[in-house]
Image (cartoon, rainbow, N blue to C red):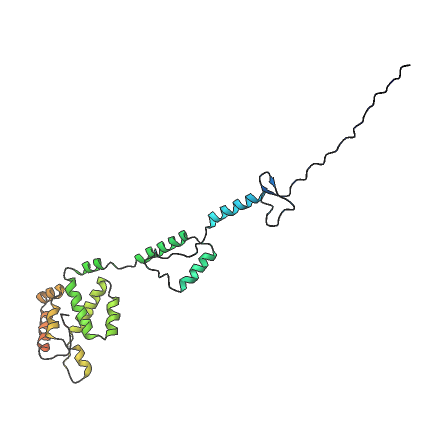
Length: 238
């Protein structure tokens, strides 16, 4: 008798695979981070690499402050001037780059240059006899002013216009001659023969002497008085 063997069927239970959890953050593209998203990684950044890149770009826009600012490119600014320490500290706090500081110094120097005096041009404006005119004024001022007054006056005479103004003032002072009368102040108005003669070194005065009888008579009268009196010093030489 033949025995029928029943086929053995094996029923395999379906296996359910659990999908991997989606990482909450990434170190770089395709490189997941471990654990919870760190607090320093804002939601607007997909990866930590994106955050680092954004800092690099931000630094390019903002710039970086040097350890010490260099003011040596300026012709006018003294880097050791104490108030500039506050400027340097503020610039460093605001991450101002040296490039911006250099531009500021350049602009400042350009502004100051606009007020600089070209002494060569100012001397030319006085004419060919500029040296003689300056010598007359310088010696007159030295002889008749205190040292402090002389220094204050000469330091402010930086233009041809200022020189001409002082020449006019000196001329007006010299046209009024006071004969000594015992008062100490009177001697300050007395002219010397030398000073009266040097007055004609000015081409304008010489021309006026030649063309204006009244000025000529006044000049001669002052010369006569100066020959009898002394006290007003107006040296021509050093």
